[in-house]
Amino acid sequence: MQFKGTVYRCGRDIDTDVIIPARYLTTSDPAELAKHCMEDLDTEFVNKVSQGDIIVADENFGCGSSREHAPIAIKAAGIDVVIAKSFARIFYRNSINIGLAIMECPEAVDAISNGDVVSVDADTGTIVDETTGQTFKAQPFPPFLQEIIEAGGLINRTKAKLAAE
Amino acid sequence: MARPMTMAEKILAAHAHLDEVEPGQLIECDLDLVLANDVTAPIAIKKCKECGTGDVFDPTRVLLVPDHYTPNKDIAAAEQAKIVRDFAREQGITHYWEVGCVGVEHALLPEQGVVGAGDLIIGADSHTCTYGALGAFSTGVGSTDAGVGFATGKAWFKVPESILFKVEGQLAPGVTGKDIILHIIGKIGVDGALYCAMEFTGSAIAALPMDERQTISNMAIEAGGKAGLIAVDDVTRAYMDGRVERPYTEYHSDPDAQYKSIIEIDAADIKPTVSWPHLPSNTHLAEDSRHITIDQVVIGSCTNGRLTDMRQAADVLRGHKVHPNVRCLIIPATQLVYRQCMEEGLMEVFLDANCAISAPTCGPCLGGHMGILAKGERAVATTNRNFVGRMGHPESEVYLASPAVAAASAVLGHIGIPQDLD
Picture 1 (tube, rainbow over the protein chains, first blue to last red):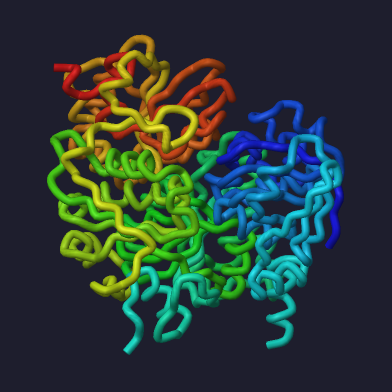
Picture 2 (picture 1 turned 90 degrees about the horizontal axis):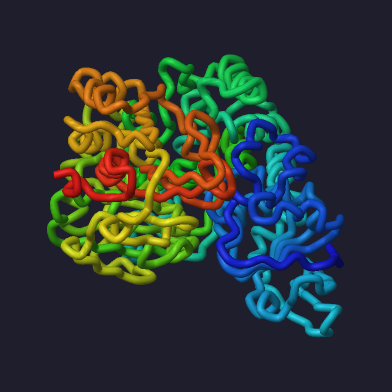
């Protein structure tokens, strides 16, 4: 999968309460959740980002609650990829399970600035900052996770497995 | 002879039907229990229906606990709760608790004997790690993992490295399990145990009652931990025997098991601790926080809503009144805790002190309902997170503390310790 978009840069420990505050968790409708994505961090987030944009963050992105509403809201807000130095583990699983592309690449995070245009090849892990011309290589996923990603998420993989049994 | 393993590795190996596992290994495991609540179950139910026949793998092993927005906060919350209720009835789920029986999930399930040592449990709630206090491997997941778990009884795991926390010596009077875990998170940071299993041991842990052990395991996630385990001992056995509904299995770490690191803590160094906004790792001593005036106190939650917590709060509040500038909310985590509070006369203490007492609910902990903060307001809470906007307005503030510190602060009108009331 190839992606190209403008970078929205944020810091470390971006928690799922700011990604989607609990006051909106009485729905699981992606479009409704997207309206409030990141609003406690930046009330203008939803207006600033466009379809296909990329979030670049420091360590421990997605810490806190297990709410899958967080990656759902990010995806529905138009973000295709999140690149971080590290991810909190439940957010990491949830993103793979629902098909939000995530990449761990500390070097890229250190070099990329807010507003840069970045292209990403999720299959090879290649990240190119088109604004500065720098190229980075993200940590590859283990084959098992690659299989889930290629199946289009955990549900599709499980469906295929159950059908084969 | 299998390689020496930690208790986390042993539980995962047993559920993957392997003689041994090692950190980093990806395995598929059979689950003993899969749970979700009224926020996460609606998506999990949808996913369960998408991936197979739509039926759960075993109606006795899927646990549905509507605790977050119940009693129903508004129409939207009522619709969510109804999805869970309808699914529970349709599937014949044996472990569904209606309002009137329900409690905060991670206090309710151990209390009701649903979880036990050696279990492998996933839950669509990050504080599922609580059951580590009973010697189970339990971890939070999202709704998709839970939905697949509902349908198949299986989940994939990456075997985590373990970190051993040895807390030796005697805690000073008034220092609790909450102070231990806040102290640890302050020391290692909110990602200090990222992807790792935390294992707690030492004479100070051994001396803690089960309720306070659950507080410690509960907050493993706030250090990024995947699980927070405490080996079974006589305290655990006394708690589980006659309570746990299925046979349980004890797993103990081998003496030569490999840990990513071993962190030694002298219990005598731990003092009443408060996490200031906006991270649980932003810890300060309660005695250094006296300048912080407050508007609300919340005593409850899956972290500190058990009987021991209620007793500790009541011991401080007895004979005092909540400061006129403070709303003090008491939320016993389960119906049984509520009843025990009544039987022990704790409710009278709370009422005499001008506290408001609520039915069991997660409510204000996640900024859901029953005690939301206005702009600029500050709360001391016995809960687990103090992120931006966690309990209400994005410009409100949450300070995390033990029940004793929270109760003392309620009387003082600012953060303080019980000795300040003398």
